[in-house]
Image 1 (cartoon, rainbow, N blue to C red):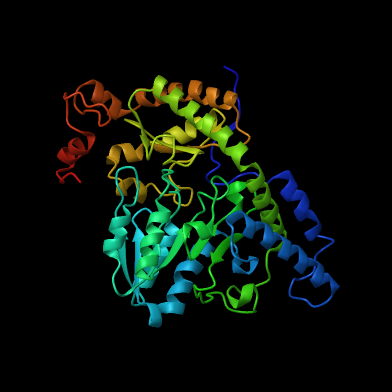
Image 2: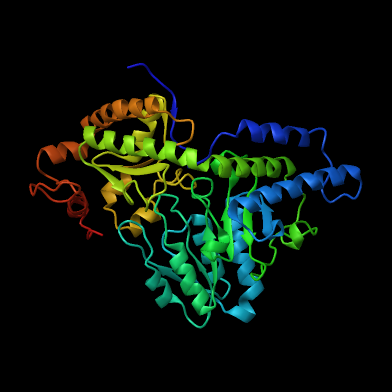
Length: 424
């Protein structure tokens, strides 16, 4: 087997489009003015920013390009949506937030921060596929609820949430609705007016734009207070000179994403199904976390748990073989803790530790996928031969969670017996 180099970590970031890069270059040298300046150099840049706003606004069908706030990244956009809305509306709307248990850390950590400042937060559970039940959201809303936050696509397991159904409930209750769309933007159509959301954030580097810019859509009826103070940029809601080159590149990436979306989705979805079928045919004791490829799952990723081995070992050996993947969310992959998303779907701890994410992109090929299908089973075989868990399974001491044989205890119960502590 000839060694290839296959990038399957597009969920973490994507390469910048050539069109976006070429559009950015003049704004480093020739068009270097500040958009806040009143002279011709500032005006030139201001016109470029206006065009980028229009391109991005069209991507999500915003009412106006003025409804966009540029930030430094998706995490800052989420912080601005949560904390900015809380500060602006605490006295008039209430001090209670409702969020799903599987939100991105930038959302969960923001609401945790608010609990230290007089706010109350209710976390809504998800089912085993990671889906939020809209009726659970309804039940969680109180007379003090100011905001509901549910992501469009889960960043770990690719689950698409019933956003329109939840939006109908928040509209009925008169509660604002914020959606983190970082894992969705560029890979599925987004229409903020059709969805019925008041706040929505996303990050262009996830769909072939540059890093260094995030976007928060804000419906004019949703008040947000700045938490970066200084000048009056971004309508007074985010101080600081804008990252002009990155915003220009983001605009081009947004325009191309709309133009090429149908082609991208068709191509990547076919690769997703090919990868899914090939791995399940060639590897025993492997589990897909989240929905199967189809209408409930984003088209560009698979979250896999391979039993009896750890995700970190899989990642390292895949990398040695020229295959780049992620082990858990890219924002927490340096931590050895189990993803809160996998805990929320009640995935067995041993399976959660054996978790990796393969995320596809527009430039991946069928040959890339076939290389992974050929290489990954060999890596799994090698790691299992080194694994004490696999030896204990073969000896009948522990049993499989994925395909129980009835010959032994679960790994979780076995570990509890050894430690003397109760199983979780």
